[in-house]
Image (cartoon, rainbow, N blue to C red; front, side):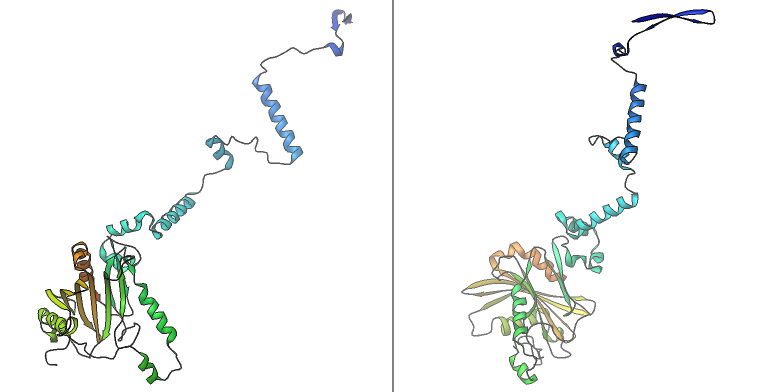
Length: 333
């Protein structure tokens, strides 16, 4: 330690100096916050200048959502939120996730779902609509039922066997005279004993269902001539027959059973005529299961309609010569 006196303008003061290597700054356990803040800012500024990185300060804590949002910038725009929400809703509805689309369709009036054909793609109240604009008919069937793939397979096979270079007479000789169903549906894994089908067949111009008589007379003639003709081992019993008028179209409905030693079936059929075509919807099931499926079959029969659209000839596999099917001929025949 050194001590010396300093004289300046008549004043005397005493200075005490310590060696540089021995000077120790006072120990401060808790430095003031201002000093720490200044040091941090200076270090940050120096780091930004040397590194050339952004000057936004230290990164936020990933566990603090408030800091994360503040660091990341503005929240998503309202337009983006609305667009994302609508897209998610559209995906859910298009996929009928959890039956959501079917539930919504059940709340809409039937005419709206029919107009936009939503019930063709999605079930509504347990049913889907089969709409055939080419043949001109529609009906509703249980939504869990599947289309009969055998019809498509037979149709594809017939197209492969058809040679477009054959002469017209040769093509006609290859055609079958028995009508094929234009549509058929049934439960998955069934043997075909339980199904809904529609057959479209050409008929003589000017033919009307009224020419067969009332529904009971027409049904009885149909059973005796077509379903269970005399001499066969089949026994057909008519249970009910009725008619209904929708716009300009007349519908005959008949309910009957058919029995033979190997089976006992319960049938519900609907007939209509339009544009020279005879439309037949037939629902069949083993008689012992009729009670389980009756309500669904009656719903399908009541929903059956012939449409103003459609070709003048059936668009189904095979060919049929125009005429009146056996058992559906008028009284004068």
